[in-house]
Length: 174
Image 1 (cartoon, rainbow, N blue to C red):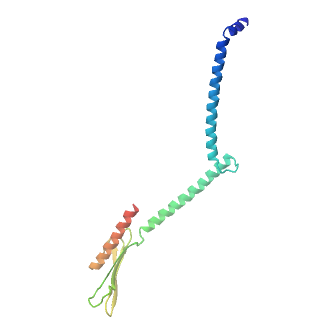
Image 2 (image 1 turned 90 degrees about the vertical axis):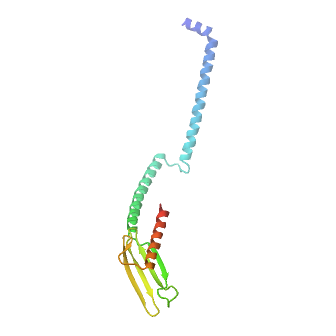
Image 3 (image 1 turned 180 degrees about the vertical axis):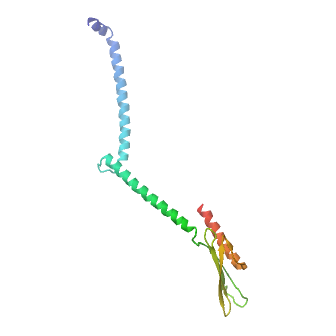
């Protein structure tokens, strides 16, 4: 024991310096930990901003419940959109109309050719021919984008106009 006391007396200045260095290292570690805690506190403050003191477990449970409900609703909306898109395939939505004078003695472009069809090219052409004393209406079927009967030039123009409307619609949706 006496040898230990002698050793301490002889090395007291070295031991004091060693203790001082250890204190500085400890102080640096404490400062580093305080900085990390401060950053963590800021993150938690952001996370819990606006919370009225509810516990975190309840907040997380509520969040998961809401997310589950939203996920189910999203699935329902997705199914509904798919149904509507499938129905749109057969919706007659591409139109082309050409007005013209069918007879030289009747002006004002009262006659018309109206073409309409769906995504699959199925539809019809309705032609109204207006004369001075009579009017007639004709209908021709369109299958796969082509008429099943011979077409007048006005009817062909109406189909081409409807097809160009379809092409414009396809360009804007892609």
